[in-house]
Amino acid sequence: MKNYARIRTLMLTGLLLASVALTAQTTATGTINATLINKSGIALVFDSDPGGVALGNTGTAAASLNFGTVSAFGPLSAGVTRPTVLAGSYTVRTLFDVNVLQGGGGSPNYTLSANLAAAAPVGFSYAVDAVTLTTAAQNVQTNGAYGTDVQHSLNLTISTAAPGAGGPAVGAPLTTTINFTATAN
Amino acid sequence: MRVSRKLALRACHIVACCILLAAAGRAQSSSAQLTLSLTVQSSISLIFQNNPAVGTNGFCPLTNAGTNNVGLDLGTASFPAGSDSLACVSYAHVPPAMYQVSSAFDVVVSKANSSSPNYRLAAEISTAPPANVTWLINNVALNNTAFTQLDATDNYGTAVTKTLQVQVKNNVPAQTLLETITFLATAN
Image (tube, rainbow over all chains, first blue to last red; front, side, top):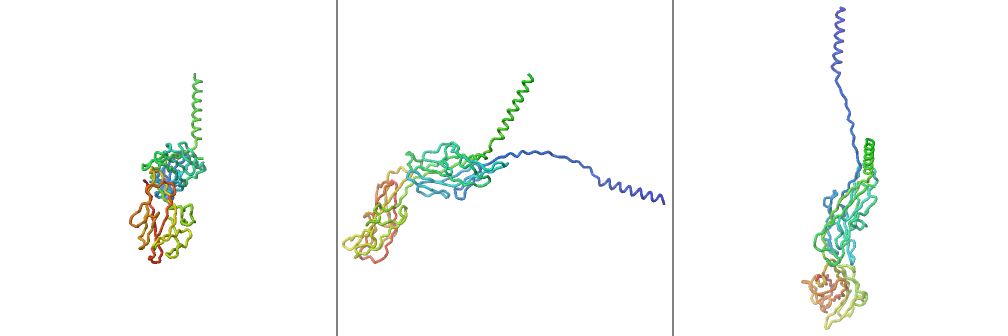
């Protein structure tokens, strides 16, 4: 009888040990020490304005804007207006948007400057908002808000003089490039 | 020798640190280009203006003066009455049985980006008038089938006075006479 009890105790102990051995697993741990330098930066893109000419490559930093055929008295393309016609000159205008995106934070707003890539052709004067452009960069806005379309006007003042007499060339396509720079404040 | 080498290395480190600090302190900026294109075209415009003598007999005021779409009221007239309801309208009896009412105004044509030295002016009425009614500009009768030339070499930017005349024979039934007169300036 005593032997039977011993055997039963031994068997139970064996079963317990076996179950513990089955549930225990081998584990290992490791860590990755990752580092990322999040540098601050800004990016400028042009967007079409609802009230202006539809830009080519809108949403990029290399957009194009076609005024179409302009004249002092004739019809104008959609999105182009003619706010003034004077004896010596007339102005055609369109609207475009500048959107400056910021990453990294730290800057409350930006300064926008613009300049002509080359001297203005004879009979033309270019202005962004109220700033007449030259080949030297000039501030157009000093407190631009990030992450939103900021509307600007592009004004071309054209002499009414005849070609060769101080007026622009007539009937020939003309291309001008304006450089814009946004600088974080 | 070793000391000077160490000093040189330290100097290099300091210079490198300064460059890095300067780079870190530089303002962030982004550049973009907008390319414009356009074609300039020559153009001319024509507007009607009140004559400086407006309000006196023979010079009625235009409505919407200073534009290319104006109105001119010649009032009410009749053959035997010998006058017009408006004092500014000039009334004349044209023997034997016709009357004429008239009023003068100015035409101004401007040019831009053009080498044209002058322009020619023509006019046309919109609809055929009733029998025995004639519309004239400076004594030149107009019709509704083609432009009738009024001037061959008018100067740009100078007011040219034109007189609109309506001649009505005594056998024309009473009615309202209405015409739209189109003026055409063409660069020479």
